[in-house]
Image (spheres, rainbow, N blue to C red):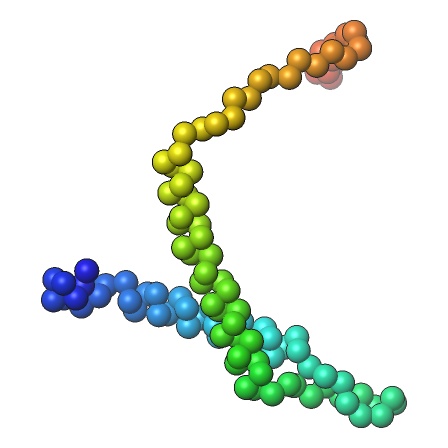
Length: 108
């Protein structure tokens, strides 16, 4: 729409910032959790995995999270257009014939 009206897009900076921060958080989280143990049994140290592997996993994770946007939009649109099919019938419970008493507390 911004191209058709020959104006600058308004939401592009906000969207870019959101996706960038999401990717950065995913990258840092993956780097933090994915380490391998090396060394002798007595002295183990953590060596982070390759940056390239973490970057590829970050891109896959970002695409996975972004695919939910059209899924939610299409599901919401479908639910708003289609008529409701289910008719809920109230369940009548036949329990024991217990008597419930309201207990008043003393004010003193």
